[in-house]
Length: 257
Image (cartoon, rainbow, N blue to C red; front, side, top):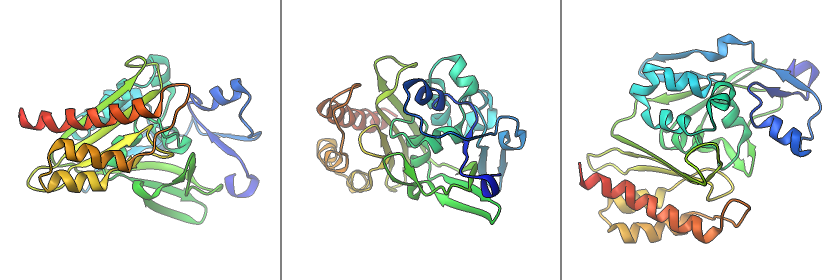
């Protein structure tokens, strides 16, 4: 249908789409309801890669033993997205496709080196999460393509997630951070949301910490890698200070282990 009858906007849990509809900012007029496609809800592991179907809800992920065991930071993010109603309807594929820089699962997927599985009538392709977004609310997804799953390789090391908002849940993020302390002299993997047009990895900050830089110096490097703005939820200055503080919390916890 996407190929023959498009353009159509895929819809599933509609937790973001209905917000745009109510605010009068939704420009799309034709939709494709995916909710009944149970094939896209599966959570499986194959060859040490965790595959989470695009229609898996936040509740599905919280209840999944395999997700809890392999990606606890994703479960932590899912628990802080809205209330039970939103968690029962919102999907990981929708969070990815919506492309909001404040999406709570997106820093987790960036820090996890996830891959987005995409399908169309022409075939399948897999896009590294770090290459999926090309600008504010823009991605490489074509009009005739569906996100079918997100794939997460086995993660070595301590996982970490923090969301800062007006409340712990049922509020959009002012700053959200996910990180993996890989240990063994390897650079950590650190990603931030709500501090740039897209979710961002921090390669220079990661390299500085791996090289033994003091946390204060690494925080200065971080500030050069983000570009927050003032908006209705927060200010750029607040976001910069909180992002630096979150980095400090993540790295200082390492010393206590």
